[in-house]
Image (cartoon, rainbow, N blue to C red; front, side):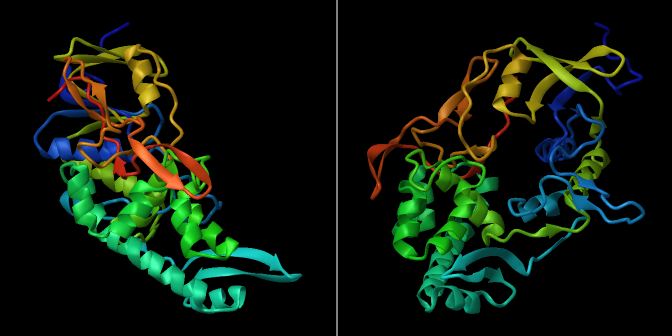
Length: 376
């Protein structure tokens, strides 16, 4: 193994080496560089952005469309302001359309386009379901206004978050009981129930009454974004966002290299060495801190540790937003200290009309905080 040369990087030791140039890694790089730290981002692929990238799918047409991730909701406006990102979004006029055949008649439910109420009435034959829809989402919007700001604040305790929500009915249906119970109680039409449940079940492989509340967590991610629950379309695709993030990081002094795959992290708890591989060589670079913008399984592999068991969850970014939830476990720091990290340990019990009482898990939404190989 050959050491990294000065021809590759500007220095041999960095304050922070970030493994992975996805959107979270780029945000971290920009903030650390702005704080005066020396930062190096190692990205395996030939481009940064991870799953938030754009492509030109039509030959001869300069139209940039999102390839994977395609909507923006959970990006705090404060990050855009702090980093001075040149980036814009557009509102969607239509959220969804769900076709169905009833009594031999082709119909469906349109949400958006100024025709939601009309579509509900045509589908269900009354105003009841639309009124329930409006009341349900008025409640989730109030929760969004109060919960979303906590994503960039110190973790609140469970009691503090409950007080902040300030609505016991909303707290129960979103944080205590399987979301399916509330949806079945509020809505009578199965198609309407299915549309609401889409935000809870997509990607989870759960059901509406899963006692783990993983579906609640997924639902909360979908309804709290921006404090409104809106999902906006990025102009120029998601690559416009990650391109702006990479630009902000570089402007602040961060170095970003692509085609560098991190294959091992060696650490004594006080400092670390990241071993990487390119097309033609292996090398290493020293760091006082290492941030890994990847899954817990990928981090364990880099550290040469046993892989943690897979969790059934919407994504690896999911975790609890309460500082004192017994459902939160601990992640190891290489200095031997313990620091908060997500867990799916059972915490309490939740009842539903379709299940007996069984252990449940907290549903608080919070982005996963990156584990560092050296504690600050």
